[in-house]
Amino acid sequence: MKKTISFTAVSMAALTALCTLLFRKTGADSFFTLSVTFGTISYHFIMRLAVGFVVNAGMKNKADYTKDWYRLQPWEEKLYKFLRVKKWKGRIPTFSPENFDLQGKSMSDIAQAMCQAEVVHEVILVLNFLPIAASLWVGALPVFVITSLLAAVPELACIIAQRYNRPRVVRIAERMQERRK
Image 1: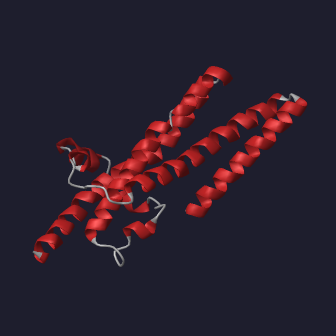
Image 2 (image 1 turned 180 degrees about the horizontal axis):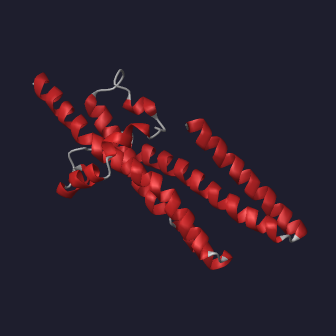
Image 3 (image 1 turned 135 degrees about the vertical axis):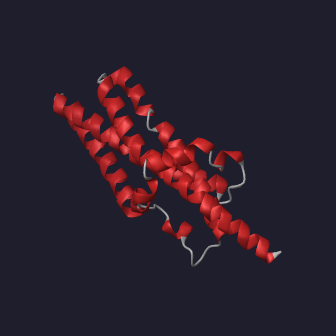
């Protein structure tokens, strides 16, 4: 997953530069369209990598999972049942599976990593809508809104999966801590 996202980010940035150069040389609208398209795609991938890097540098998988922000709200359980999260949550790819490895981590470590992953996806969710501002210069507002919405859907799925799974992990972590006392 890391290699795929990194490769896509670099490839799209290179294609953006190439199409921008070709547009400047030829003035062809098709190169401008491709430049904007590849630029938007590269933004979404580079932004995801940057957010993950910055949040990891700040939190270092040491989130306090007892904070209110990370606790399920009463309405969430009904929503997750309606969305049938239990059926699809296991199909979501993980960027850093080593953070959730039951062999090398305690349940408390995993709960903290889950909180950090949620924060990463929440920040990305908001930043997905930043390209809409580009429509002020480029036009095509509907295109930027649609691509931002489409990019936001996987982030919502990741946030929901983290929030759905974490209460069970926290309960196990708390039981294990009580046994040690």
